[in-house]
Structure formats: C-alpha cells, structure tokens
Length: 311
Image 1 (spheres, rainbow, N blue to C red):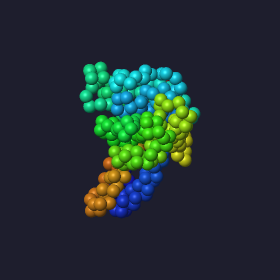
Image 2: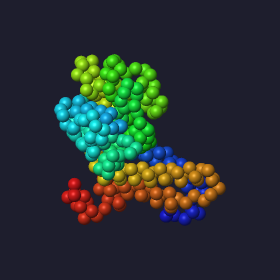
Image 3: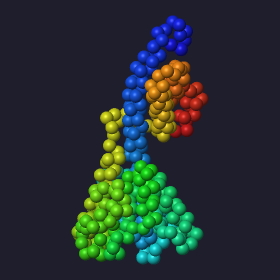
Image 4: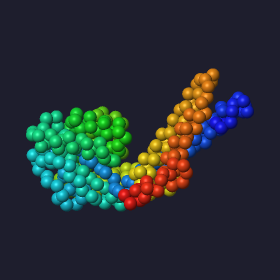
C-alpha cells in the first residue's frame, strides 16, 4: 500500500487494512504483556524477593527479623533509633529466597545526622522492595505513626505488596488480634484487606505466640506464591533484564499504534497516513528482532558479541 500509488487502490483499502491489523496488534500486545509479567516473576524466583520492614522506632522490627531468621542477626535495644542503617539478610521462607531489609525507625525528627540519613535510606529501601511489612505496636493501644502511614500509601501507589504486622500482642493478654485493632488499622489504610493484617509478639516465648509467628510466615508465603505464579505461558521465565526492557518497549510501540488507530476512528474525515502507522509497527518489530537475533533490527555482529561477553 505504501509502495503503489493511490490511484491503483481501493479508496477504502487503508481503513480496511488497519482494521484487520489492529485486531492482530491488540492480541499481540496482550501476549507481550504476558511475557513481560512472566519475565518479572521469573526474576523474582531466580534472584530472590526483596522484602523491607519499616515502622516507628522501637516497634519491634529487629526483634521480628531475628525471629524470622532464627538467630540474633541484628541488635535489639529498647532505646529508639538503635538501627541506623539498612541491614539486609538472605533467608529461605517456605521455599522462596527472600532478601529482608531491617530499616531505621521512621520518625519526624531524627536525633542526629546519622539517624536522619538512616531514615532516608529506609524510605528508599521500602520503595525499592517487592514486598513491604509495616510494623505497628500495641502500647496497649495501637501505635501507628503518620510517617509510616504516609510511606505505606506511597508504597501502595507504587504497586508494592503490603502486609501489616501489629506487634506486642502479649500486652493485651491475648493471642488473636482483636477485631477493633484490625478496624483501626484499616481506618489508616482502607485498601489493606483483613488477610494481610497479622498480630504477634516477638518477645514472648509462649507456644501460642509462636504459632502467630508461623501464621505470619505462612501469610508471607501466600503473598510470594501470588506474586510468582506464572500466566498461561512460562516461556519468558529466563528473560534477562535487557530482554525485559525490549519487550516493554515493544508493548509501548504497539500501544502507540492502537492509540493512533483510535484517533483515526474518532476523526473519520481525517487523512490516514499509513506510512506513520507502519513506522510505529516497524519500531515494535525492531525490538523483537533484537531479542531473537533475526530481522532488520537484529543489530550488527559487534553489538551481539558485546552483549554475549558482557553477560
């Protein structure tokens, strides 16, 4: 259609062609999105799931981390602000490799410049994590600060998986989190479901409190399972970051094509520029050829060898 003059074609040919192509592009876009999702989930299983714990000072983050790893991995002290920097530990949770980060307690005013830098790093660690655990505490009323709620909302907006843990349950003399405490948490974070809120005691050695820790661990495992369950196809499980970026770029160009088609539908009297439509699809095809090594955009030998030896 681009190569031959318009007087040799049906005047309606461009719109007919684009209508047919649009349906195929729409299906291809969904397939590419599925590959991108599987690539991300495969990367989580291969490289480990990043988990960050945050909360107010002295909420019990370090104590919970020690209970999870089963040893005294980090210093625990009643003095608020003991943890100054992000401490990362690798641990196996129900078969998933997890990198857990214990962060400095979040509060409005830091005691010194070192703690202030620790708080800044804690915020960044939370926003970079795949899963975040907000730790609140009972004193005996629920203590959940504005700083932690604000950061939790930022994490939710960024698409992070969030779990809320209410520590020091032993102060209420019970082993099950009361309904009014759950409702109080949901007042601060309305989008958090009840299944993502856990109550426990990190310091109590009572067997029933130990079961609450196990319940929390199983809740984490359920979130990990949900995050790593592949779609219908698992072909992209071994995708590298470079391939993932190229797939995302391909999806972007396909969506640009569909957007242009929609604009043409809204303005039926406007001239349809098939050349521009074809150029957008060529860019999408170029991304795929850089992954497969076949096609006009596969790149020269030097580029391919550079990727091979770099990786």
